[in-house]
Length: 186
Image 1 (spheres, rainbow, N blue to C red):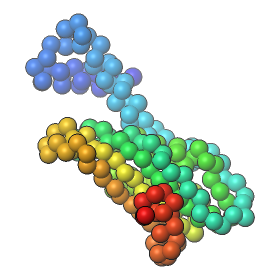
Image 2 (cartoon, one colour):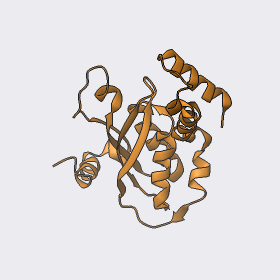
Image 3 (cartoon, rainbow, N blue to C red):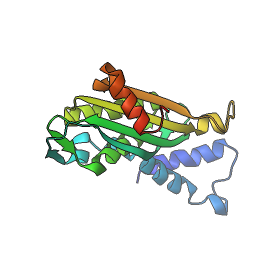
């Protein structure tokens, strides 16, 4: 664990007017540093490491969808969480990706300081790069604590973002099928 990071959390406590020597706060700087390192561990991962060769030959050329992948990330503007679900689809061209790898790719990028729009694109680009798919679609729906806990304080707002690549961008029917299958185009 990074000693300087825990020292910085101690300074934050002092800056907030707290006493870091108070019983309840004695280990808080160390715990907060450890938590932040965990929440941002995506920086220590690579796409190659995550995929680990889990591409398998397949003659399937129909849409593959993994939906409702929970995600937890931190807004890069306020360092507050945003929490939601990702829906990921691709159209294979000879190879399919191991199922858990899709969720691991979502996690790797979500565990970095982010804005949702960029997270959506990073996931789509990564799936495209790994699978060489005929098309990739990603939709993320998330609640942002920076909007719920501070500022405008809107508790029921949900942000949706999407990225459509290849066949999903070029074909309205393909895009419609995806949106219908994830329950977003009724």
